[in-house]
Image 1 (cartoon, rainbow, N blue to C red):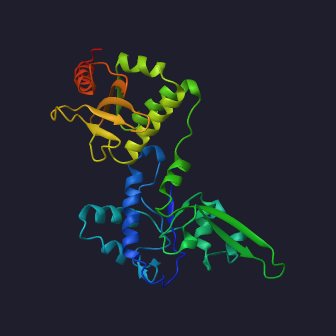
Image 2 (cartoon, rainbow, N blue to C red):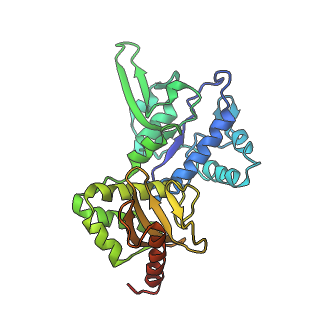
Image 3 (cartoon, rainbow, N blue to C red):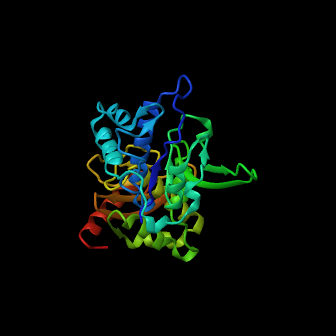
Length: 309
């Protein structure tokens, strides 16, 4: 089952002055699109809503209105439509939650009726929340019912994404790091979700000589590159993570890098294939310098593409 977000409707009808609801909604759509590029997270294609876009009210305006404010950004607008109109309103089968007496209790979240959030929680969804109030900017939202007779409190918590905690949600949904001997297979699984993975004997030999800490750093950096949309195909939109060959503009070789640790992984990456070619660092070169390493990597990659290593 995909990891599904319910668009939280427990919001103040009139947020504080200065809160730009349209901008916050735009940030949510953009943020989800970026997360969705990472297929390892298993995100659903769309958000679940409490009703159709013309009836869902968020901070005094309809969801349809918020989506419409993105029309000037065609690609983002189309994506927002897919997110919000591709899902059915929040519903559940009687067989799933039949007889659940808690659904009849007046649970609250930040003072608002939290019935829909409670249903989403019970259906193993998470919340996607417009961060219009600091009380909503938390990793988990409290859904609370207080018995009016006994004053006893009953509380549920639902995982909550509000764009400001994207890293926490990515960490929550990212598969755990495997045991020490399986880091190689983990890397192949991570990249293999996007295309076929090829590697040179040289790269594999260097990988086997690395300590687990460096291996995990490389895996983490590839995850950063996937999250940033820098792979499949490779691009240099963030050269702090993925840097193309600066001397040979025709080369498809890129460098996965992390300035602090200084490691470098030379690779080529098409829309449907990854070629892991060479490992290096600030002090480890296969040629005289980094420029030579790029040239060597280009030669090895060409041989890999021909099935030669």
